[in-house]
Amino acid sequence: MNRQKWVVGITGASGAIYGIRVVTELLRAGHIVHLMITEAGWQVFHDELDWHADDREGLLREKLQQDFPGELYYWGLRDFNCPAASGSYRCDGMIVVPCSMGTLSGIAHGASGNLLERVADVMIKEGRRLVLVPRETPLNAIHLENMLKLSRLGVRILPAMPGYYQKPQTMDDLINFVVGKALDALEVPHSLFRRWGE
Image 1 (tube, helix red, strand yellow):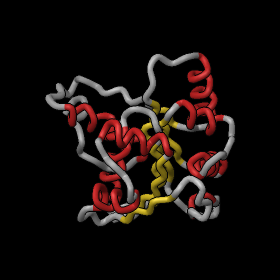
Image 2 (spheres, one colour):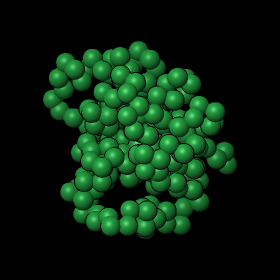
Image 3 (cartoon, rainbow, N blue to C red):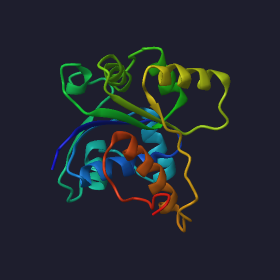
Image 4 (cartoon, rainbow, N blue to C red):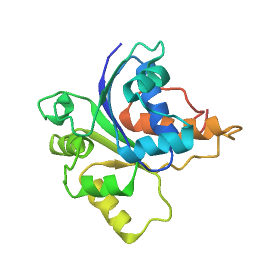
């Protein structure tokens, strides 16, 4: 197996389950995951998933690591000792899922105001894969201009829009479609949904 190194950012946009499912699928496939979660992201865990986190690292180990062969590393947003904060660290890319408009704006403007934004900046400057999964509606002109700016830099913008041609029967089917498309953008094999024509 080709063990890869991925960075996953989870922000305060609605849709925390997308980020959680991406992490578990990468760990299930045996990859190394460097995980960062914004404060608003932790709030969404509480609001959408009923996760109560007095011990954040313990909660992540309990919910995400399970018996998967991958390795999970959790980094606080002020911990710039994270190897992925340097362009000399060879990783395969980064995904921010879900990606809030605030984080997207910070990345678009090179703010590097926290570790997540800094690592995204590294991905852009090093020409590595960066995928952003925005979950917002409606989109205003500022949102769209920031997305266009990033897209022109080679960043993949993958809105959390599930497809229906596979005739989803459950909420999991809808989640798996978005997560599968995100993994496709990372070029990570999966079998989360039935493809068109199959």
